[in-house]
Amino acid sequence: MIATSQQLADVLRPVKHVLLDFDGPVCSVFAGLPASEVARRLRVYLQAVDAQDLVGGGEETDPLVLLRRIADARPDLAEGADSALAALETEAVRIGKPNPGGEAVLLACARSGRSVSVVSNNAGTAIEAYLRDHGLSGLVAGVFGRVPGDPSSMKPSPRLLHAAMETQETTSRQCIFIGDAVRDIEAGHAANIPTIGYANKPGKLAKLLAADPIAAVQSMEIIADALVAL
Ligand SMILES: [Mg+2]
Image (cartoon, rainbow, N blue to C red; front, side, top):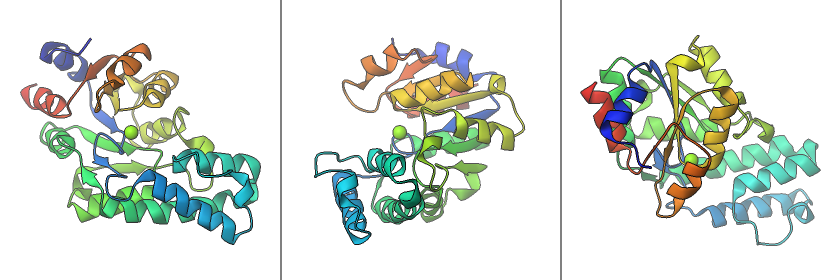
């Protein structure tokens, strides 16, 4: 079920720290430079280090899945591949598309005295570049991108959520996590943080609900509105 404004208000009232996924809620990272093109360029990088056979032909178009495969098969290449991908992600966010309501949530958190930490499988350097370009850095207390060279840190691992909570010196009871993927909700469960599923595309809602979020929404604006109304 989609959360009503009242349900959202109840969920958000005790929250002091908002943990926010990046790709989806804040920005559509690969809207300008498609993920499939980023994956292709990552393969070109692998050719250059003579390791193209690691990830097969062109069938996998998710660069983060490729990174995980590379690190599993050749841990010695993980760091180099990660920084090659981070550079591509930085290029992508520069022509990515701001997500409607993403900035409104950042502003609503600032106005209501709640901190925001971005917790994402994307590279922290790319996220920071996006926030700088859009004048949003001052609205974000911390950026927790994947640990460079260590894709096992990515969600559904709770590791990045734990890092954000530690930095904010808080506990899961004062936090909420907002993400648009099943792995976000799984990471939230693993970290014991209630997670709002953001269904930003048709057909995503059922999948997110099956992962048992504390609430589900179809727009970020409704979260911003609920925060402002509290
Ligand atoms: Mg996402």
